[in-house]
Structures are given as structure tokens and as C-alpha cells.
Length: 104
Image (cartoon, rainbow, N blue to C red; front, side, top):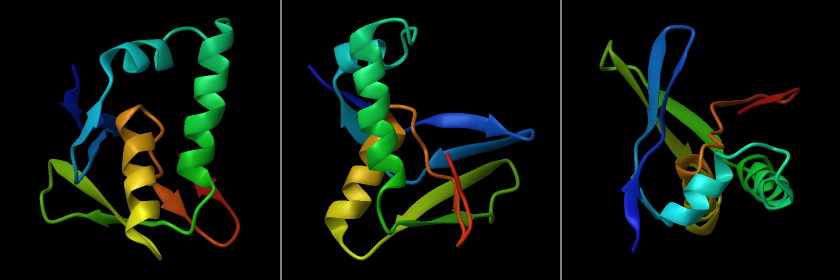
């Protein structure tokens, strides 16, 4: 069984969510949100952090709705976009990238 998921969160009082919904495994989702003391959780954390950060994706934030900001990922390939959306569905959301830093 898989769930359709798009990660919704708040930053500085603004609601952000990814533009695309992704099917996620509920067991993996639960494990990814468990405490870091779990060895499996640490491996999942490192994996999804790498998916979110190690790419050429540029997150574009749609600000047409004053209540919800939609994050759309643009990249060199559809594969990179899919991996970034998957990482976001598990809670590792890339929200900003500049030449000097990455926020996720």
C-alpha cells in the first residue's frame, strides 16, 4: 500500500508545500520520522538528505497564493526532479539554493 503525499510545512509563518504529490511507503515514512537514535533512521536520513541536496535542482516558489507557497523543482533532467520530489515527500524539502548555500 502506498499513500499520495506532498510535504506541507511552515517557515517563518508561511505555509510551503511541494507542487507535486508523490506516492510514499507508509512504513518508510514512519521510519523516516522516528528518532535519530534508530540506526535505520540515520541511514534513511542520510539517503534522503543526499537526494535533496546533491543535484542541480533549482526550487522555484510560486507566490500567487498569499496563504500557501508552492515549491516547484526545475532541473536538468526529469529524473533529478523526481528524486527531489521524492525526498520532499519524506520530509527533506529543498527550499532555496544559491551559489554559496543550500536550505532544506
